[in-house]
Each structure stands twice: as C-alpha cells, then as structure tokens.
Length: 147
Image (cartoon, rainbow, N blue to C red; front, side, top):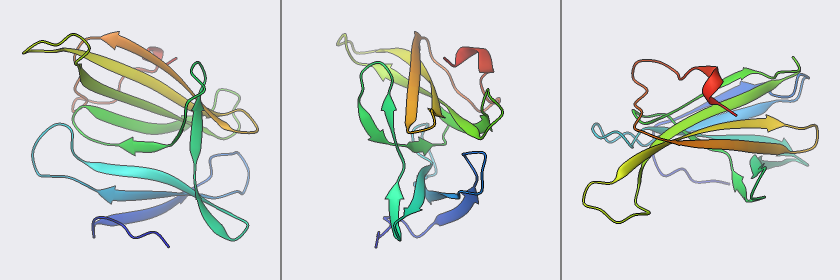
C-alpha cells in the first residue's frame, strides 16, 4: 500500500506499449497556489505479479536509474506523444531551473528537454540542456527541441 501525501489525487489509465498492457498515471496535486515550481506530479504505475510497480527509466548517457516523475507547472511540462515507430507512446518532458553551479546572487537558468521512450525491454531517457529561461504557460515546446 502507498499512502499519498496529499488528498488531491487522480488516477487514469493509458496504453504506452502499443498493445493492451495498461499503465496507470497517478497524479498528486502539490500546487501551492503560487510560485512557478509547484504543481501536480504524475508517476507511472504498472501491475506486475499482482503488485504495483513504479515505472523507472535509465538515462541513456549516464546510466542513472530513476522513477519517472512528471510535474506540471509554469516552468515544467510534459505530454504523451506517439512513438516514432508508431507503436506505443513516448513522453516529452521539459523543465527550466536555476543553474547554481557558479555561485551568484542572480543565477543563470537552463532548460532541459527530455524524451522517455521504451526500447522493447526498458524505459530509457535522452536529455538535452540549453542555457536560457523558459516558461510553458503559452503552450508546449516545439518537438524539435527534444533529443
């Protein structure tokens, strides 16, 4: 059993693999009513051997593994898109964050564009980070920005 931190949650089902297998999108609303870094967070959940399992991905370059966790806020957005081979779905994810690597009073910003995709065995992630600030209240970024 998983106890959720907030009472505002939604559950919906999707088919990510191009077959009848279901994945559940569990969205918990962490909105604070202000600020550009708070909002609902969606995690992917699947049933395997009668148990719930969080869907994780491996970052293609670093081989870091982590649970797929998708926020929706002013500076973070995501959406499901058709996979390039026409079978199943991919996830496009973009986030803008301050870059604290060079300590300053006023940090520069970077925007990371990520693509989550299933390679037939596991979920992988490719990322591309560029300098600059982005806010996504005017719509989703163009697909050409995603690796």
